[in-house]
Length: 132
Length: 132
DNA sequence: AGTATTTATTTAGCTAGGTAAATAAATAAG
DNA sequence: CTTATTTATTTACCTAGCTAAATAAATACT
Image (tube, rainbow over the protein chains, first blue to last red):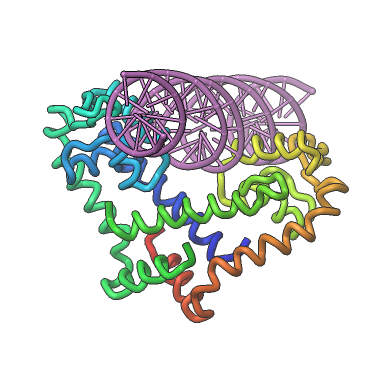
């Protein structure tokens, strides 16, 4: 395996594991957090808006949203267009999200903090420059 | 989500999907390829050697090896220490792997080819420099 | 020698991604 | 207006990672 691929996959797995570790205190998984944060920032969204924004396939979002609904983090309501479901944060989510957001953003900042601002930009540029 | 995290996770998912796409012609999945290539380079290995080398947990490897065994790519034999299982490439695998390896290494090289040699080194350095 | 601990592998069950195909509503075509 | 196509969501099922706990062999302790 090409060392770049290898290093990238390793780091990616490592970081999701760390993120999950930190999220444990809030009884959340990384993918759940990603969706909640997305709704927190953009307000109510349809399923399609969510999966297009997060750049994953629709079934992954359907499943995650069902779970979040069961756990009381979000509500799913029919839209004007009756095909679509609009997802909104529950009262509980709205109450808890500010604190969770704070701890997670701090964690993320700490993880990338070993790079200088310039290195961070460089890193994103290199990632974007890679084919695809 | 921190833009670095976001970019890194996206690229990681994107690259595994591409890799799987290319591996389709050989009826293999990326994790299977990773293990086969590992055995191709290092010769027979125990399960523990494999998961420690690839830096994943043991159950993931157990499952993947079972599948590879079913498909006839590897054989599992008891070691001298009767707790351990030694995994070896089958005749079929040995015959096919050189060609597969060639196409995949070429693909990987093409994917990172949009970066200069120097940028590639830089990229790995930055990855390694990130906490963890 | 007999018991306790460690080590290698496996099993069960979870999240998290993917594809392919089903369903149902909206829109376009004739 | 009726039919065909597109679009939004869901269902079923696959790989791929994880943790926790079970099993069985090897090693250490006394």
